Image (cartoon, rainbow, N blue to C red; front, side, top):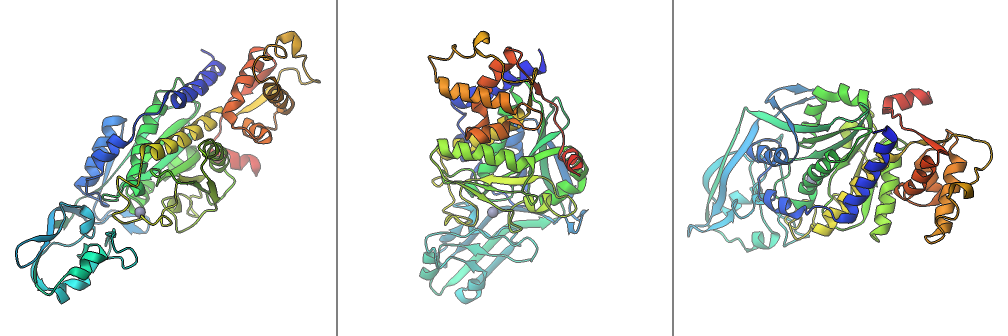
Length: 461
Ligand code: ZN
């Protein structure tokens, strides 16, 4: 099969995935939600096990103490149980109810104390009295419990039995990556983080979306690009990953996308890469604007923010990779963020599938974008004698005809399909049918060669 035939088959296959109904993502969300994830430990490994059961996943471990750039892999944290009991022996705070009750990376504790002694170790949110906050203390040795402010205010003077059955000892940091080999070694890259406990939108939604997306992408008839998806703890995990694999990324990356907060049905939010004008930005902004408008959702485009997620590492000065981030409601801006309210009720199948559609359209736009070239560039070709004028009277002739004329006019080697679609104010995937007719009529050929970000920069320089 020719590469042009594969090109059109893959475009239609993604249309069909979206039209036929995307897989349900909430069952995996419900399965993985209870796990107590952190930077390290069994919860992270169980999460990677679930991802590895769905897609091929190359797992890696980095021992405690390994130096990665300016960082050091921390000790491994595991927890079996934790509680605060009152003098009647009742568990008033119970890790088994929600793992958010325990500050992540808490040192082991086994003590009895007064309320005054317990208070400095309690965390609550006076402004959100019904929410349990999520807290972690990775790099300061501490222990603590999180609870609603309402519950905290109801605590009375008593002797409290405080137990945290945790271990913090030399171990490993886990991460994994999944790859799909395409016709070119140029890569479309995705990254999500795996270190939050029972929080649904930030970030379990990212793991589940990316695993499903890679499975669907692997099943496509062909791939012009190679694909890489990284599942690593935020910050230190990605820094550890980059300390081993940065060379692969700088050499092969075409565009990268950090997947986070994709479970609510709020506005689409795209945060640009630091360069702001890369293929990642052009493609994601194009795809997401159109997906948002078909779903009647707002689309916010934001500039790079050094207080963001893992794009902070990918866009750091030594790498400056073309990595942006697509999410729905932006982390730290929704009220449920980093609290017990970011739970299974906050995310939804509609939200998850809407985000998956956004990411699939990004993949499709990458696969589709190319430069069309006229086989005979002089004047307009006569469309009537090729059946391209009258054939579509019964459909929307105007729309179809306008698309044909735009493709023919801009098939000059300078313009790509995203530019042509942008001029038409339509998604690139809606100009593929007219493009296919022009290719079948031998009026257009497609330049399907792809390059990496590095090659693009060299071309500009
Ligand atoms: Zn977070």
